[in-house]
Picture 1 (spheres, helix red, strand yellow):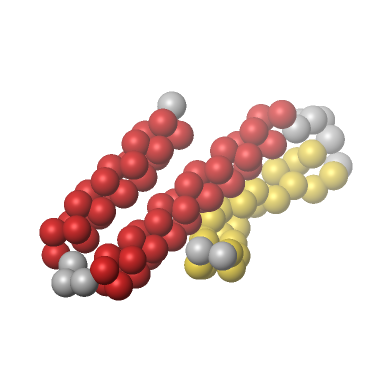
Picture 2: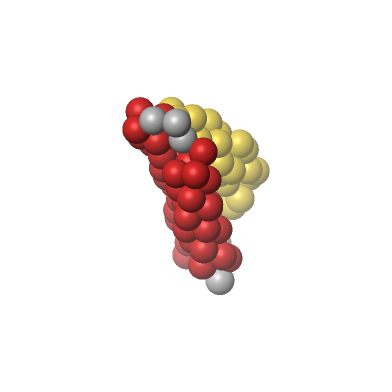
Length: 94
């Protein structure tokens, strides 16, 4: 259910941001640059949500008798739309 909330949040971020940009922009170049930055932020948020979903699925579907959860660490990756920080779980084979 949390994924739906995050998707709605991203859509609202885009709608509000585009509306603000169109009202305040002085020229087409500013519109283009600010919408590009806004879409990059939305893509980063969606990627974090997707990575969190994959991590949770791996945790739930793993063979608990074999794979033991060790810890979780924050990771930072460089993507086409900027730096993305997310939490990842690590496991060890018993």
